[in-house]
Image (cartoon, rainbow, N blue to C red; front, side, top):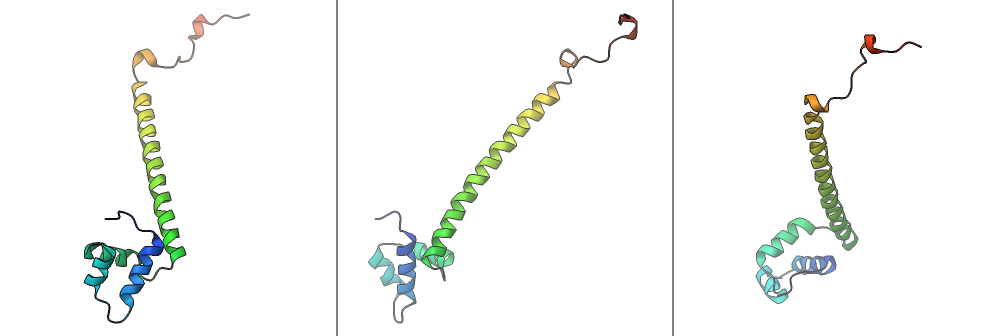
Length: 106
């Protein structure tokens, strides 16, 4: 069984289903897909043109990429916060103002 159909193929199958007298079950058998797949496609792509379907696919891929980048950035920020929180230890404090009695006068 074919695993992937192009947007053009999916929209073509959906348009065939819109033709008068076409039985969904027969159409699914003809294209070797399940009825569940057909109805999932119809929910996702119904009324789309091929360019719109391609645009949807591209936007979904871009959205997934941006979500991954955001998750990585949030992890980096949390790591930096942990490091900054550990800087409260006495041994890691930045030097404070100098003791005025120890300052040299010239």
